[in-house]
Image (cartoon, rainbow, N blue to C red; front, side, top):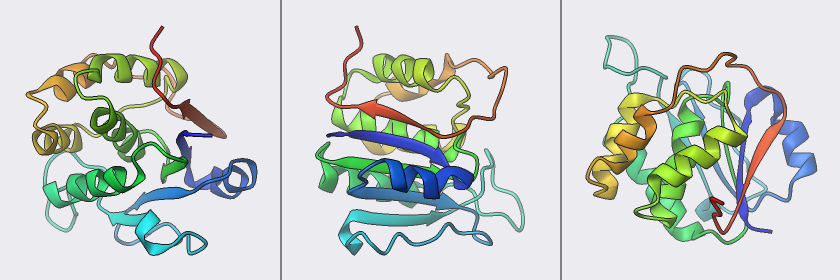
Length: 173
């Protein structure tokens, strides 16, 4: 099985029991990092620490370019083979961006299709706008990711339970 799994901190244990994870991107606040998934080899996992904020603020870690590049580096190693787990505290913003970034890397030029497909499966997402811009620049996507993500409406409900699976290869029928 190949795909991307999006979940939140509260559902991490259940997700790990239900899905054969082979790669992972864990995102949290610097004060509250998610657990290191040590059952995966170090080259198959990363933990990123930044706050879910759109602009730098004193005492807070805003997303930076090196965070976007770390996601892209892991996605390049993964290359769509196996199951990539992406999780953060709520599974709505930071991890949603990482899902969109992974799909943009795997399917350049199909950013709009990717956003629409993920939003259909996960209508609760509200990707971090700062990280979208940084990722678009790192990808050299010429605003395609920014423009596609700009069309995501504010969700009616930001809470979800469990996980979503984005199967690969990407199909946007």
